[in-house]
Image 1 (tube, rainbow, N blue to C red):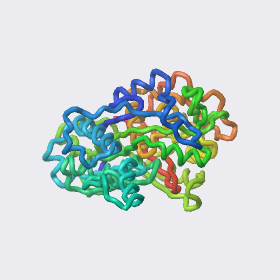
Image 2: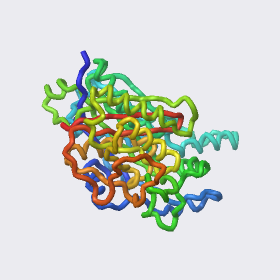
Image 3: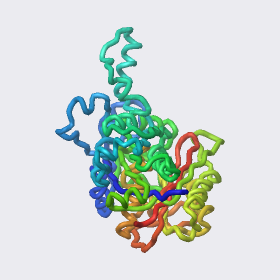
Image 4: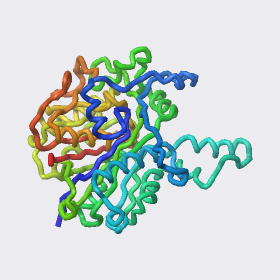
Length: 406
């Protein structure tokens, strides 16, 4: 029997704010979080000097023991997860029953601890390397640290698929619940800011260079867009089997109706509109829905030339109509491993409130982008039951999630 999967908790650490409610409310200010970061100007040959940073403050109650194996990326994940677990009302018995698992990811672990290993190799002397150094930088650092902190004993699914890390975690977690493997899953994604991430996209000529007008960028889908802006943060979902949630009286925030993942199999960085569309149609099929039932799409919308064109072509192919679409990245920048979960959380809030945010800085839609209903201005009030959240990543990984209003 296929079981229903619902959302009972959400948490966030983002450039918009350090919880979901604040982050969603900040969308109605209609101003992005991009700022000039003077530290980026210190790097020779690094052209982009702008980014979106969280204003995260480590809680005073977190002891050294709590965070000794955590870099910033794991601490962001922990903060978001504490919020989600609290909202869901999960008790220790729920977390430690063996029926609760963790699916979580990021592009990589923390970058700073790598310097200790680099120093060792360079100087031939082991200095600064501790028992926690590798744990902070390992790709599964968020998932493992969360599992240990909350003492879960169920499945552990680390997702390190770049910009789909968060969405893939949510999708995989939903499938584990749907097929009876787990009753509850902690799922999401996180990323900490590093100049190295800016450099990755800078060398691909994919970063915005509007260093003198940070509020004007990124501009997803706009004819004058000039690239993405790097951000950081985390978002966590508590997913739960429907009857399990009802039995313990949990409030249901939304239902995960469908999920699909496809891989391009053609190129590690160049998007493939056909296989991207396959993820969208797959998620609709998984949800048992016709495309006409979905009233809004949260687009990946990175503001790169090739990415936006391929994504909109895929969306048009999957829907066959000008479905309403907007990009949260116009506010937060590209939060990489966090974006799939953070943007999905904003979709759930939109379904709850009926208000859907605009794409900032979108003034003139690029004629090369497909014909869609691009949400601009003050956003859009929609009375809809289903919404979709899409993300695409290096390696040719494509994900799509369909949510239902509670």
